[in-house]
Length: 439
Image (cartoon, rainbow, N blue to C red; front, side, top):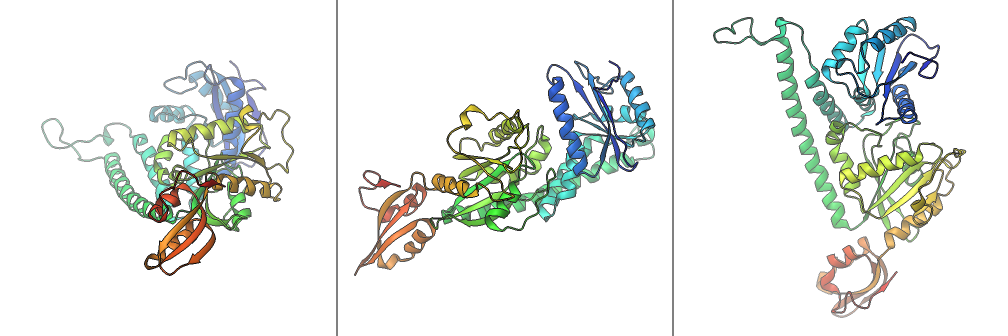
């Protein structure tokens, strides 16, 4: 297939950071899907500070094992890069170390990276906290280690023994040993941070406060929503992966009930598995949440597909099946004509908002409160005066309606969920679980 107007897009941009994007069309990735994926790759490149100059899509049923696109296409791509002063080529896939080496040789030494490398670069750019930086470095090193390459015998290990005497350990192998030690050190540091995170989660569990994770595709507006609800003051930009580090804030519902809202790292198609592993402790905020708030960009024609990606990643993480509120954000913008809302979401726990303007946020809060209060019951707790501290627990975890201080006991009527009722079960009457009224 020769390059034509449909598969090639050239723009006039400054020379610095000029890049070519390359993908293939086959049975697993039809043309329309390949185009959308390349559009997303262009947005990733823009977030990383690069500029798309050339786009190439090739119809090829099976990727070439040496160069992914075949030697003929490599030659055509080299000519395009030379003519358009391109210094970076980004492939919309994950390349093997040998493919990268062969491509760079065939492209006159120009730098070749793949989708995973680009995402890692963005993560490195946006990591702010110590934990975030450690997670990014670990993911980068694990991805880089098998891609270290050397040329010729000067980078071969020649140690002791007959037939192996020589100059000793190569620079390549010293680099690999250094990477191995650094990876082990990073894993130890992140394990310690994960233990601290588990301690904080355990404290939240004991508090009984409902935990709500705001999840969704990258750039859906999660940080903007958290800022709107809690004045969190976190960075909210119209870029992919602007937020990497989770932020948790307390939010008071209209009833006075407090909940914890957590902004999480965004999802994306084909999120590299090594990133999922490195950011596991961060992504576990969704796993440990009581309620999921899935945010969707209603102005994006890919909204339906982004929802599918989000729900699949939640299943992969083991976070599916929780009470969920689906929120279609950016309703202040014009919705695309071809926006398709899944049939099962047209009714039920769904709302439309603009986190930027505040439109529809009151409805979101009302529905969120309904999910939080679902299954709560009005219960009577009889607490001995000697154990009055339990009343403080009740105030923290339930909505207390009345308190009567008697000579021996404190009698409190409160609306509580099953978790709180179980935590304070010893203060409930024998009829608990039989005739209580639900809110």
